[in-house]
Length: 313
Image 1: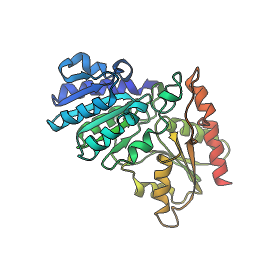
Image 2: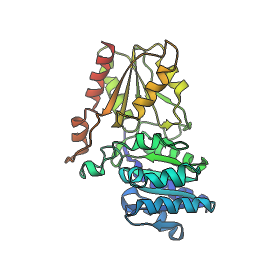
Image 3: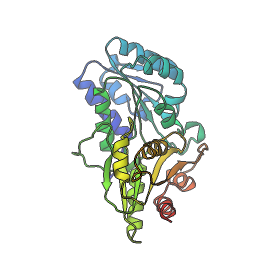
Image 4: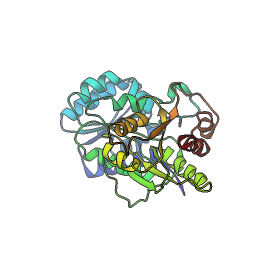
């Protein structure tokens, strides 16, 4: 598997959309080189608004541009995109259902060097709770490109979180993205893993480890966290001994919560034992390397394999 960068996918796709549609505008909160929205700014300076370190102003301005018929993409680090302008997102974007697309870059623990102040452990829960907001978490470079295009076509507010680092490609370039649907990445007969973001790759690697032990694991990619495909989740859970959810975010209010809400509302066949993996109600910390944090917060393939064994004991 080759490694490719989701931030680059965002920047490239935003530039592509800008060439296709003059109504596309982009706003940035002083981090254009990092989020890679500066690709758009270089080509369309008249449609690129550098707002400085003023996220609330950025969202309010994006809302104003949306009111004039534009499709506004606003980007910054995920921790700032979701937390600092929450009131503006709620009142000026979500309530009136405006066409504002928010990109949370360097999500989860992927900004490993800057520590807990820059690591978004809570952004999925924050954005998921907002009525009218659609929430996406792509697994790799190609899925990021498809989701950004889908966001531009969707009428209303959207949020996407992307990893900072180069990560393995796990989806095919020509595979279609189905908005609001789960995607099975691997078949299995014993346990189903629901994973999102970079944790899809980690879960696939865990499934390989368990296969050597005779444990058959199904891996499901949840790229659309909201609206959540509850019916699809119940279908994937039927016949399984247990389920495990894996996300690079807080275990409170995120993917694990969405899966449990879906399974408990189904019939007896889908109400299976479900264990939630993620960041355990704590903040992040700084490290020299990204992988060090994945070990510290128990989000490695070995950790996922151990949780699957626990689930079926």
